[in-house]
Length: 309
Image (cartoon, rainbow, N blue to C red; front, side):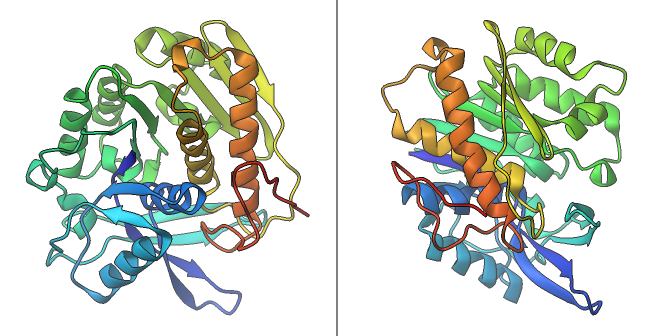
C-alpha cells in the first residue's frame, strides 16, 4: 500500500466571466486521487471539515477509490485557495489556511498500525507550513521504518510562508529521511535563490535523498542521482491549465513504484529511472489537458499508452 499525507482543500478557479468555481484540490489530495485512479488503491491521511466543502472532498476521494484514514470530520471550515491563471494556464494562489480543517491533522489522527504493510509515503504542500499539520508530518517521517520509501514534494508556495527561514529548516528536517525529492525550478529558486539548480540538486543528494526529480514547466525534466543526471522530455499537449501537473507527476512515480514491488530504488540505474519519469510525465501531461487536477476518462495506466493531442 502507498499512503499520502497532507492537506485537502477547495481551489476557487476563475471563469472567463469572473465567477469562481469551487474545485477539489490541494497537492496531497491531488496525488492521492490521481494515484488511486491509476492503481485502484491509495490511503490518505488528512482531516476533512464537516461543512459542505468537506463533504465534496470526501465524496471525490471515495469515488476515486481512496481510503480516507481519518473518519471523524472536524468543525473547522475547509481550507481554501484562490487561484489566478495567467496566459499559459499557470496558477498563482492565495491561501486561507490558518485554523482551517487541513491544518488540524495531529498525532492522535494517525492510526496505530499506519506503517503496517506500507511501501511508500508521499507528503508536501501546505503540510510544511500549517500547524499542527507540519509537526505531525515531521514526526511521522521521523518515525518511519528504515525500509520505507519517502517521497517529498515541497510544492513551495511563497505567499503561504510567513517565515522562510523556519520553512527551509522544515524542508531540511524532512530531507534527512527522504528517498525521492520532487522539486520544480520555482521551488529551488525559493529554497536556494542564489544557487545553480543542478549544482544545488547534486548538493542535496548528500542530505538524504537518493533520487531528485526536477521539473521546469514545459521544459525537460531532470533526474539527478549519485550516478549522474539524465534529462527526460515532457509530452507535447494542448494545455487547458497546469493545475496539479506536478502532483500528477508524483502520482505517476508512485504508481510506477507500485508496479515494481520487487525493486530496490538504490539499485535503480538512470535508464530505469528515466523510464519511470517518462511514464509519470505522461500522467502530468494528461492532467494539463483538463480543467483542474483531473485525468481524462480515456487515460489508462499500465501497458496501455495515453494518446495526447
